[in-house]
Image (cartoon, rainbow, N blue to C red; front, side, top):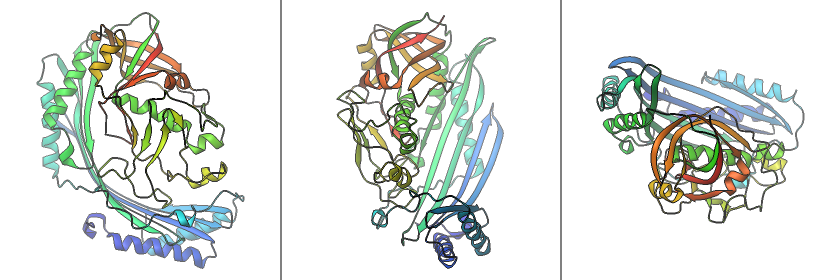
Length: 448
């Protein structure tokens, strides 16, 4: 259902007309190809801390971007003014810029035959008609549930709620014109436990396209409290090499390093520890990574990418073997390949699980380290070297025995991926990568 003009100031038909007008202006200025896109968004955000409203914000954003090509020369410009005159001026500036840029044989629109036709409705638009008062009440309920759950919860960094809705339209000189509306909603809580120097903080959140899919405010607050309390009494451990479990919310980031390594940009720049790895067994044979861009209501679903290319189901890794890169049209041309419909990123990467939950995985591990938080950016995408500050829990006989802090976990991503022992069925569906817990056979834990 299209938004009324009152929400965004313009409705979808009007935005499409502006995009078509920009493309027509580019043709009149002698551009050989052109593309234009508009994004309009509205939102409401609130944070309540210790029962008082700390922030209350209404957002209203709009942007219009145009890219034109004079042969193999490219120019781009953007504006937040959506008047016809401002857009025509942006086209003129982009055209002027293109006359100064160097020729690049790989630049240009994605091939016309790859454009999406009749994009499907993926159920991405679920508005949440909250008043500011209702949003404040919900954030307050979330924080209150956490603060009142245990007397050891001594402070709060707040309960926060965000709801947003956007309208996006993209068109190009191949004749493609597509758009969609989408929503995103989230509710979170951050709590502090302990006294003096022995204080710990943790959080929990729920997010989704549909507000009906969110966990309840009380459940989020109580889970944030539970996670915070589990960290009390954390201590260092001595340096050792042990099995390590990444929970789903951190396993997503681990797989994210893999996606970066097989992205076209990393490949053609020769800045990847998985350089030219197509056909290699980069994971154990039981691992399959599948892209599923058309899942209804999912966080990263899309019928077409940022270049209008139709998205499709595919296996990125099959039986542990890398079968494809993650490519836009430009990076594909640099590599002599065809775009995979990933201009703008990955679309719902599903990490196939082994059917067991986290507790079963911990029992099978016996003794090791369960990561709870990662700190720092010690990941080298060229060599694959991985070293990050961490906190978590020490596991003995398959059970959590004590919290651990101020350690560093280290390894090499290429070896870490090959050392995956099991992937759990406790899948986190809140992002573009859907993974359960991941058990690695060994990493170095640097402690005291």
